[in-house]
Every structure is written in C-alpha cells, then in structure tokens.
Amino acid sequence: MNSEVSELNNNNLVSAGEVEEKPATANANWELCAKLTRRLDINEGLALPKQAKYFNAYTEFKEFSRTQIKDMDSMFKHYDSGKDGFIDLMELKLMMEKLGAPQTHLGLKDMIKEVDEDFDGKLSYREFLLIFRRAAAGELEEESGLLALARLSEINVSTEGVLGARDFFEAKVQALAVGSKFEAEMRAEKEERKRQELEKKQRRAAFRELQSAFRS
Image (cartoon, rainbow, N blue to C red; front, side, top):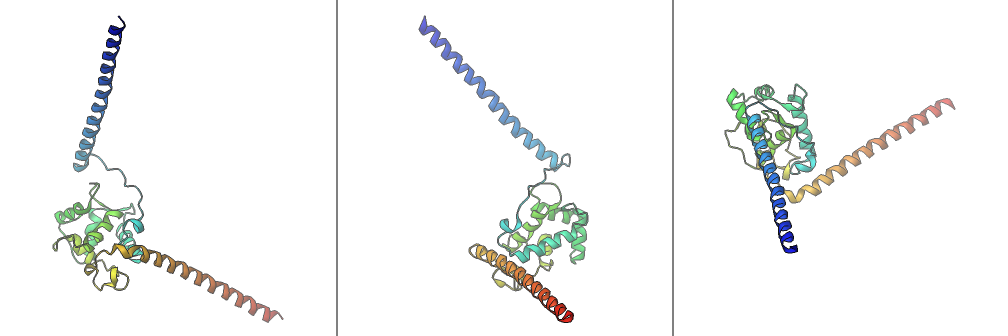
C-alpha cells in the first residue's frame, strides 16, 4: 500500500513539474513574439522606441579626444534646432545643405538608417557620434552621405586628433594611447582652472594693496 502511495506521489510530482515548465516556455515564447511585434510596429511607424539610456561619450568613445567630443557635441546641438535631443529628417536636410552636400529625401533616410540603432527614424547624440567613429575606422562607403557629413563637419583634428593626423580620416583608432591621453587632458584642464584661480587671487590682492596705498 505504501509503495502504491509513493508511486502515486512521484507521478504527481512529475506532472507538477511539467505544469511548471509549460507556463515558463509559454512566457518565453510570448516575450519573443511581443519583441518581434514591437520591432515591426516601430519600423512601420506604429510605435515609438524607448528612449536610450544616458551614456558617457568620453568613456564610450575613447578613440576621440575631449576636444573632438566637445566639438561634435556643439555641432549636434547647433543642428538640433528643435532642442529635443535628436536630429530629425528635416534638421539633417538643413545640416547637409549648410555643409554644401545637399541630399535627396531618400538619401537622407538612408543616412539615418546607417546608424539608426533604435529604428526611430532620427539621430540621437550617440548615433551622431557613431558617424564619426565609423568614418574614422574607414567603415563608410565613399559615396555615403554620412562620410560627406563627417568630412565637411570642420571638426578640428589637425593637432588634437588621434596621432595628430592632418586629415581626420587618415587617423585610426589607437586604443593603447587613449587612457593616458584622456588623463593628460583632464590634468591640463585642472591645471588651467588652478592657473585662472591663482591669477584671480593675485589681481584681488593687487587691488587691495592699491586701495591701501590710496587710503594711507
């Protein structure tokens, strides 16, 4: 009798295990289906992608100097006329016209697609930096509108660029030198702030001394 009860309990345990696995499998399939459906909705303009998380351009794009990233940041903000953190199709159109390399409507859409990681049809700041990364690495076709954008951007790399190259696109990523270069730039900025603060104190002291001389 006890053996029959034990066998019955074991059968019940197996059945329970099977019951537990089925919902898990069903949930996984449902999540995959939901992701694919959302991707299709985004592509068809029926849904908006989630906002990208904050990223640190200085740590993620280590192949560029702080000066280069600041220049890219200024350029992005200049052409982001809507001040929404994105460069949309019309803003990109205006940018290319001002750079002297106007594009067709289809050409502009193709430019965005090349770096549009979240399929929202516009350029985020991170995607904008990807243009320069891919250009520097030689990953853009010669006829690419993005390559024209990068070449005409006037980002100054004559003395600040990787290896000090005269042409931005002659420079390649030098990962081994990035850490020390970044630290050197940070130290230089810190020393410059100290120097400015010291000069300010010296001017104040000289002014106070001059005041004392007039009063005596």
